[in-house]
Amino acid sequence: MSVVSMRNIVTSFGEKVIHDGINLTIEAGEIYGILGESGAGKTLLIQEMIMLLQPTSGEIEVLGYNLNTITYQEAQALRQKWGILFQFGALYSSLNVAQNIAIAISEYTQTPQKLINQIVATKLNMVGLSPDVASLYPAQLSGGMIKRVALARALAMDPKLLFLDEPTSGLDPIGARDFDKLIVELRNLLDITIVIITHDLDSIFSIIDRFSILADKKVVAQGTLKEVLATQHPFIERFFKNDYVLGRYVHKDSPKPTPHHL
Amino acid sequence: MTYLSITQNDRSITLHSINHWNIYHLKAIDKELSELLKKINNRSIVWDVSGIESFDSAGVILFRQYYHTFQQKHTVEIIGYNDKQKRMYKLLELHSKNSTITIKTPNIFHRIGKATLKSLEGGKELLEFLGQTTMAFGQSLLSPSKIRFKEISYYIHISGINALPIVALTAFLVGLVIAYQSAVQLAKFGADIFIVDMIGISITRELAPMITAIVIAGRSGSSYTAQIGAMKITQEINAMKTMGFDPYYFLVLPRIFALIVAMPLLIFFADIVGIFGGMVVANLELGISFEQFIHRLQSALSPTHYLIGILKAPFFAVIIAIISTYRGFQVSSNTQSIGYYTTKSVVNSIFFVIVCDALFSIFFTGLGI
Image: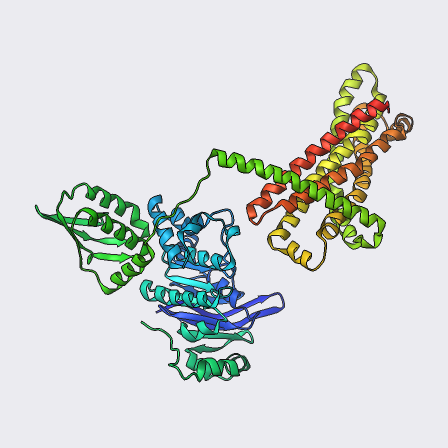
């Protein structure tokens, strides 16, 4: 079953064409990567999936809703089923960490405050933060902590669909690997479908099931790592077939990193 | 909707979890469980979770909480769980060890102390700001090549020229209102022609400078604070500092100079439009023709009044520019403080403009001008 499907997406700003006929399908339960050069329109693509931006033409379907014909009520319901980790966190600066994480729960449900506190503490723990940070404000957090709090906020309502825009950028390598592990664990336990924009080679080679490569305004390759590596394209040549990647990830003597499946 | 069905005998009680155990139902589930807590009476508990239709992590957190509560006094056996539930439980158990958060709410003494320290700090910052600005101002006068003329002309355009329509409209309306009010009174005495003195002196000496300053404080002062505040949040000011671009030369002085240049011109413009507004009313209400009005104005309005009005301009300009840029630099790194300091900037600017105007009145009255 496909969770997100995009058909013939065209995005243009005036004369400038960003996407020219994008087609992609994201299946339930997979960790799907979107890869491409800076300026290829990866973030725009996600913004179109989450109804922040209307594509110039084309059809998008998310969790069974067609975004071209969706009603206001359906859109509000859909918005409770996904979680989004923005590239720079986008925490509400006037709310403290606990309020940031709990905001969707306290707005959309009648959960008692005592339980909300417990849920917040658990989510904080899950993303590797101590409950002590709960009363801090976003301005008092470091970059990595902001990312983690933002992830905790995205996870607050147990979303069916999680969008992560460069989740590991700005984290230290150890923290980034923990983050990867957490993402896989969450996917396995909660049946989340995860859409992830990343340049992190470790993430690409270890956690991503399938991905698509955005270049020349189109999806030039889509599929598993193996399938993508078999495709001929200058970006793929440059990104994957250099000495660094070949030496470190592809021809490694130790057991090859394979995508973690259930 | 119920979430628990209970079968019980003398020695044990069996809870069957049913329906959806997710975040949308937590309140009701919590209520049912807490009511049940009173009815257990030393019996052993068997908790059957096989009837759950759906669950999420919040539901499992609640389950875990009550499981631990039950365990304190009773023997509890969980049955009917599947592998996924078990793994979820384990994951959450792992992350729920010290699972309470404490939000510190400061008490009254803490808040009073903090507010006191903050205002002391603010006073120190103001002194530093004034000192730095004066230094930069003096150095700019000594070596004019340091003055950013391009920025100054930009701000004259934004804060001066673009403000012409709103200044014109306000001044015109004020002239109109003053003229209407005095026309009625003066007509009672048959002193119609003195409306010219009334309009000419009050507009040029007091009203035009004041109206212009208030419009500029609201229009440009607020934008200066918000611009500088936003630059502070996005770390642009830090970037400028590290590249050797002194914010006082690049951000503060151009705005001060621009207002010093623009303000007298705006006041002069407001003088003309305000008097014109009075002229229109004098014509309509009292039948004084434009020629008569201007003829009378030449003898009634001595240049002193006009010059006093213009003299206030640079003072008002400096007050507005300094307060608004200073408030901009006070913005700390959250979006709310932009709103807070922008409000403060406008309120303080208008207040100090009025204070300054009052001092001028006392001063000039003392001098007998």
